[in-house]
Length: 124
Length: 236
Image (cartoon, rainbow over all chains, first blue to last red; front, side):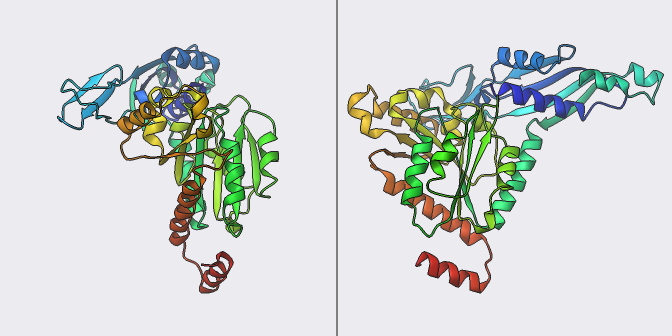
């Protein structure tokens, strides 16, 4: 259940980018297949750290592979054991991505009252 | 309003790991993160290793478990430099755990540091601790499909171990299939087959550790008096 600590890390990083007075609404992140992040577990972890008001959008990337014999590169949901050329020398390309891409914030309150930062505490 | 970020989610962990790496590197310590499933023999291997490493080498251990001090108690029979980290609900060690462990070990008087991760083939892989090498461990009783099912540990390890080879005659383990899966996923990684119970294959493991330590020690700039003292102590 490494999803729990990754969820907390995503939240901490996202919060550091929320403008003063704004409210965090949603998060968009991407994870490579090698990270072994289960989307359902991630959503459970997200709720587990009290973020039911913030939408977490996670994209799990497909495997990218290259055949060491014929050089073909392709993507698939599963790591292939053989290439179309018959070779079994399949090498994964990347796959360890783990990035926060963007956040969506509601800054209506900060526009009404620029000195108000109280809404930040809502996501804590 | 959309705010573009595009940042590494584990940035904080990686920064702490970099601090650990700098501290260990400056002290000339070779550190390895031993990862494997519960029961694959990580603690038993470290026990056997502590007994076999040349007695002049000073070795420390940081060991992670959800709870109990049992592993630390086992290894304290062989070294005074043992720190048990209890992660509670945490299924892996993170860089801050190692930082905490390093604060309780005199690394200036250490040559090698073993970090025994929480028993888990998945979660520890993606977390840099500041170690020099990640070592992934499988065992014959775990099944010959574990490398194929856990590609990340095969990809990310500097060295892979297959433990409990003494049990090969008694368990359905196709070692050729296991080796093929590893080679397919990571053709560059070395696989050592050993048994920490019988000692089979341990010589190569000990040699690998000592070789890695010498490379780490060479990174450090020692005063001439220290070099002489170490050479004498290690009978080099």
